[in-house]
Image (cartoon, rainbow over all chains, first blue to last red; front, side, top):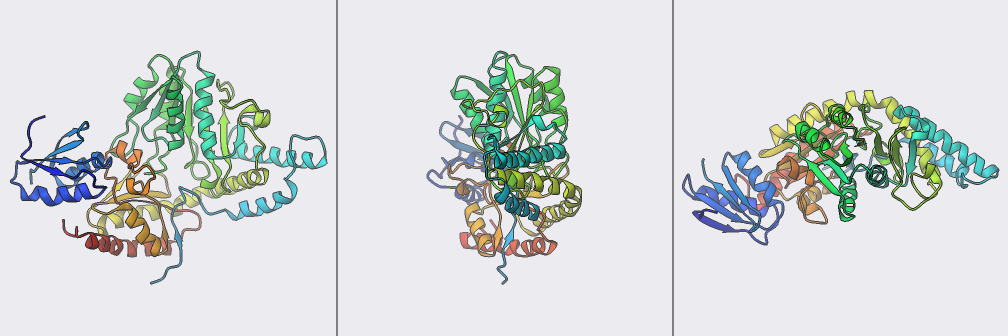
Length: 75
Length: 383
């Protein structure tokens, strides 16, 4: 997997905290930047793509083995 | 603030129908004997059991000898899946099911896989509708013994395309099991199934009574140790007073179903529209049109589902949630997961015959403030 611009460690956090922390951090990055969210809560696999859809951000990929989720800021 | 209770979780258990209460009390006096014995008290119990079976079968439009009572809807679902697979094990060991089956069906599927069988889960779309092309391909694969499709989702309300799914099964000679727990007593049953189950406490009957219907000519074999009760389909002595109450309330609920649909469906429409308009950052899920008349589900962004249930409970509202923090396994609902919709801050509201418009209005009036307070407490307002 290609290297993200920044990594946000949300391991050990339960839903909805990983999504909240993603929502706080992503707008601080420049448009086009890729944020990798490390999250071991099973709900993150559903909720991070859903958040991207609701917020118009781009969900790039899930890395289930880590587990991690890459999101690109587009707005 | 009024805290009179407002019960909005009929999809888990509907309040006991007055007809059920009446029948239950009468049958406690008359139906305590073992209906399989050969004396007067037993004959009376047998008459009650036969009448209950006849009434339930008539309501569902099936033959009485096709219908068995079980100790729960879950037992019925286990029997439907494992018995349907066992009856056709010569054909193969493959089970096909939708990704949004009830956990009772999925747990039976897990048992089947643990015993050496296979299970193929067919996806649904964002609205929770079965992928018919994938379903058709899956049931057409070699070695499929049984296909299982929920009639309508108990979590999001989306009605499944049972007739089309059944047609795909018929083309390849695979029997279809339909879990009709949310349909029986509320909506007409779809055509084309070979095995069907339901659960009495979903229509206002007492808890602890399930229905298992196996159509004539279906290859089905009991997965349980041998027992002569219920034509050998489910073991053990039935809770006959509860069975009598279940059958009586089923007839009453079915008789009122069209009127109840006409009353409740617009209330669900109102909840869908008002929640979407008045709660910011909310995702109302499930098919907006092809859905159950009494059930609606939505997810509130950045809100903890368990905190939301507790906050609503403090105001007297009983609802349920598919969020992971509300489940014992800390996993989000497999239904929400399969649909790819937001799983946290999830609330399922399900209405019943005692639900009033005023109760729905009170819920709608209080919900936006409850959600806003939780977001403010969590420091996520405006995020």
